[in-house]
Amino acid sequence: MKLVEVYEKYKMIDGDFNLFLENLLEDKSHEYSHEVERKLTEYKNIYENLKVESDEIQIDEERSNDLRDLKYLIVDSYFLLIDLENFYKYKEIERFKMRAVNHINKRRRASFASYFSR
Image (cartoon, rainbow, N blue to C red; front, side, top):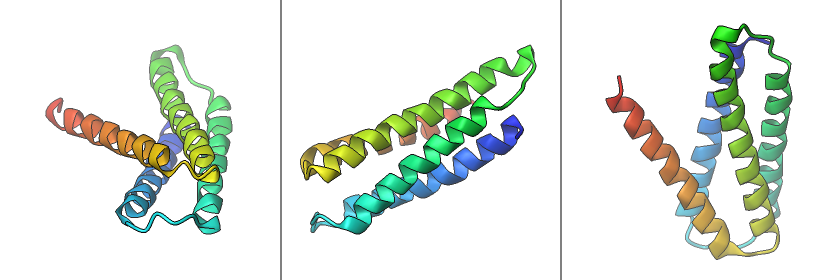
């Protein structure tokens, strides 16, 4: 698979995941749900598979930094999912919310900064 294809796939998955997180945080009940835990595990597995796909990319030296950056984004999201899945599973809802909010704010800052760097 090519670098651009994996990146586009990452953007789509990451957008879906961020929307899922935002919707989850908007729900004020914060009651435990097996469906939410299942969805977190599903996203974690998706990012894990995306990492495997990125490892298979053959690229020339000129684009190696782009590949490295993509792998960082994927692994960063994967580690986030590990944390969120564990916080949720052990019903540490405040830690879950804090980690999720920090992630969303980080993504928004990055998006905002990239807007001005055009």
